[in-house]
Length: 184
Picture 1 (spheres, one colour):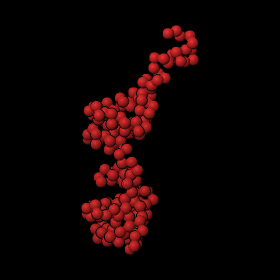
Picture 2 (spheres, rainbow, N blue to C red):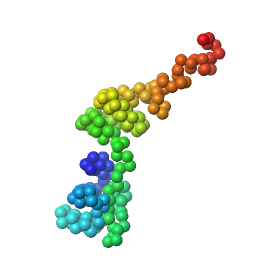
Picture 3 (cartoon, rainbow, N blue to C red):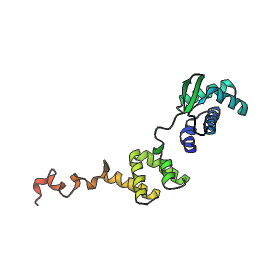
């Protein structure tokens, strides 16, 4: 839950009251030990008013912002409305989560390199590179970045490297434009 909070909720919030509302939604859901997936507005309102002094109007505005930012979704229930956190579209695809789950603790320098890799390479390549490094028990960012660099320079087509493909095999010179000039 903490990783979803830090990677999905915090970056999307724009107001301290919105953040407080999200914290209390997660707190109340955690208090129910996984037996509920949403929190009724009345329950949230009484909890927040008692603990933070946030007014009804501030809570309503904060929840509207959270819905607009895609952090929570509004659910109509018999007694009014309830709110449930919206899960990230691809929680496994987050490069920081991949690193922490497969390599180790994230440092600021590595985080910068991961951000650059996210901009440079497709998400599927990154996930496959992590998978390959773990399978070979080569758990380091340097190894993963070399895999990505190799795929970028040599090519990667449907999981195969360009140098391994048929068109780049030993017959590529014979079949090419000037193949008629080459003798076997």
